[in-house]
Amino acid sequence: MDFLRPASWEEALAAKAEHPTAVPIAGGTDVMVEINFDHRRPEYLLDLNRIGELSEWEVGQESVRLGASVPYSSIMEHLRAELPGLALASHTVASPQIRNRGGVGGNLGTASPAGDAHPALLAADCEVEAESVRGTRLIPIDAFYTGVKRNALEPDELIRAVHIRKADGPQQYSKVGTRNAMVIAVCAFGIALHPETRTVRTGIGSAAPTPIRAKEAEEFLNAALEEGGFWENGKIITPAIAQQFAALASGACNPIDDVRGTARYRRHAVGIMARRTLGWTWEQYRGVGRTLEGAA
Amino acid sequence: MRVNFTVNGRQQEADDVWEGESLLYVLRERMGLPGSKNACEQGECGSCTVRLDGVPVCACLVAAGQVEGREVVTVEGLADYAKHREDAHPGGGCASGACGTTLDAAKRWQSRPTDGQTGEAVELAPIQQAFIDAGAVQCGFCTPGLLVAADELLENTPSPSDQDIREALSGNLCRCTGYEKILDAVRLAAARQGEAAQS
Image (cartoon, one colour):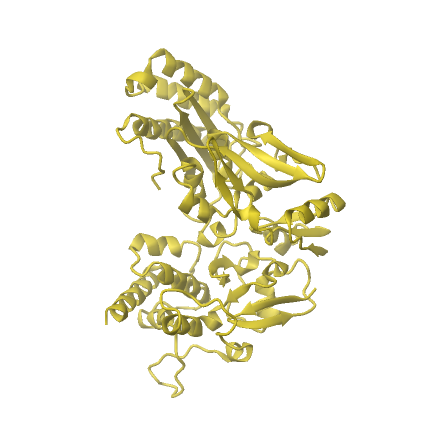
């Protein structure tokens, strides 16, 4: 094994181009587990800790450019107003020790369906900034997850940052697990209201081979909200609409039975979380303050 | 490969480090500092919690090569770290290589309560004394990680709520017993810290 320690982003890209099999390591919270358990013996480890800009973020007009290695603890602390869904999701990641090291770049790189950030990223809408010595491209999040633990990155590409649309309305995140800390999601659900475009977006974790959106549920809800004039009149969403939304979200799942839960339970729980998080966000939207900050 | 880094405030060098080795392995097997415990090796249990540039992390999930040029505080250096914080850097930690614990002293460090039964009392960090006074130590395996995590909490949150304490310690597992006495110990240390600040 070789340990590559690029001092700059350019050096990192050059190293990845020269050694496409190199495994990038930032927080190490996925990679080190695999090495400790001898599940993986990469030829090269590519340490990204020395590249300071990966831990920085910029808040722009439309979006936040979040460096790939910004730890979850920083997202929770500093980006709660701009990225409330992701801040809530970050808070559910493992433990303080893990949140101090892990970041969104790692979640995307690993692309596990259980990654906590994915439902929030899907709901908020974002693009992954992938870079190689050949150039930079922005991959829409809807095209990023290509299979179980597979993503759209080319072998010579590294994740530089994620461009996440700033919240223009309430966002929520919900996760099912056996306790609050140190839990891999049995399943998870993210929702973001986008009043500017009068749309709702969703994200589902751990209930399909990849993180997914509940697209039919979104389309149904967007039409129902439009038809009933809910965005203008701010009325309570009728139980029938919420129930149908929940049923469609549940139907979007394609889960498996595993040690953490059964497929049937996951479908059920996703429906419950869809209904609840819709209720929470809609209450926030109707509320006077229209607070954008996450509750947890 | 060779790794140069600061352990408990003193510059150290580890040789012949395997590239896939964890910081925990370097500390325990190469530096002779077995205070940080090796249990789950997957970040679940928090027994190996150390401070990396002041931030609590699981040493088992940090690649040795990643600590090059960085600062690590282990439980063996916690008493000195806490004392030094109080004396020289009130309200914060020490990050300079000038202060700290020698490797030799850290290797020999043992927790002996100040009740003087052995006649050679060693000074403890306030959080360590509080763990003893509250009876928060049973088998002791989870204790080092809890001490490092709890000390960091009290450094940054002088009057933590119960919720703060639970959250700060949520990444540290104890399998002997409940967590009540551990929570008591942190409350006790916080209260003593508060009293000391007032007087």
